[in-house]
Amino acid sequence: MSWDRQISIKSKEELKLMREAGVINAEALRAAAEACVPGASTYDVNAAAEKVHHRYGVTSPFRGVPGPIPFPANTCTSVNHVLVHGIPSRKHILKEGDIISVDCGTLFKGYVADSAFTTGVGKLTDEARKLIETTESALYAGIQRMRVGYHTGDVSAAIQEYAESRGYFLTKQYTGHGVGRKMWEAPQVPNYGIAGQGVRLKAGIVIAIEPMVLIGTEATKVLGDGWSVSSADHSLTAHYEHTIAVTDEGPMVTTLLADGNPPVTSIGMTAERLSRELAQGL
Picture 1 (cartoon, helix red, strand yellow):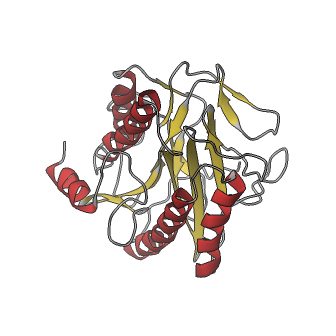
Picture 2 (cartoon, rainbow, N blue to C red):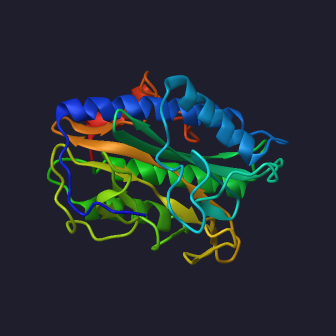
């Protein structure tokens, strides 16, 4: 994982390209979600997203990322206790009641989009449904604070307060991050923090916010494949992510579908609702 430590301010032209990348990424995630059915493999889920990439003639910045083995797919598919970085596999067959997080990246005309969702496979338990809804809601709590003059600590604190006040845990080992020409740019944005601290947000800063929420513990461990990150106690986990640009008009979510709707939602989020909530502000 190679980090660019300098904060990059994107121009309006660059933000337009990042929005185009985000639409493709959203379409890939929507296709992946449709493949999350009992009997499908996580390989099938990744293949659905890859099909969208191939249609647009784009690549994923995930594929080939250095590690114990170069990452072999366009998406991460993380099931149940696996929080992030799960490797798609023909051998991993989804079962009724599983939950799966799909994280996808798109590289379009030199710019990156990065977003993720968690969804159920078939019928969910109340425990799993509440976890997923809390994780998505925590994401939007953070997005509300992606405004000129706020700080990264405000974003982090909003995510932390939302999740922890409902009895959940947030990993301290993995963070949100700047996005642009590289997948990992400054600043890092943890899912915990103190309001008013951190980097002061300016128009043109673009950050991928990604609450990673666990039921039983904040502790995680890397599994034997060298990539998959699991909750230490094998309790359920969830992950939601959008790439957001700070603008003078407010937060701009780049990783929505072309019509402004999220590709996947557990809380009934729509383009109209999101526009209204962001316009109302804090």
